Length: 126
Ligand code: 5GP
View: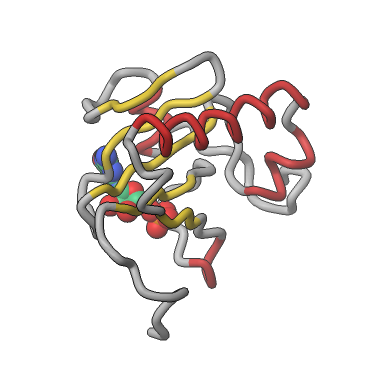
């Protein structure tokens, strides 16, 4: 178990494979700490996934086990992506699904960044 109580990180998950360059992705940003790429099934005109380069499944895992530099680097990367995509002024939404109830499909921590149109408020039930 990881510190968050989740199973160990699965090195074969799709985002780990994208990080290793084994699977192509439309990359929009990369630095020492994070990678951002377009979601394969976009749900908004801009739908980008930002992932830390370290092997973390969840926010609990990341916040407990990552170094301060990794955490700062990842948060800064999210801000950089939003700024570089020109979304700061019109606005955008960040969303991170965690575990079963959160609907997380890929067990590598990621933040969805949605933008490019009015997104309404919060989430729909379902
Ligand atoms: P989750 O439900 O885990 O928060 O979201 C995972 C996201 O990853 C989904 O929005 C899905 O469309 C996206 N995704 C799944 N497989 C791939 C892939 O191979 N490439 C890219 N770019 N996105 C993917």
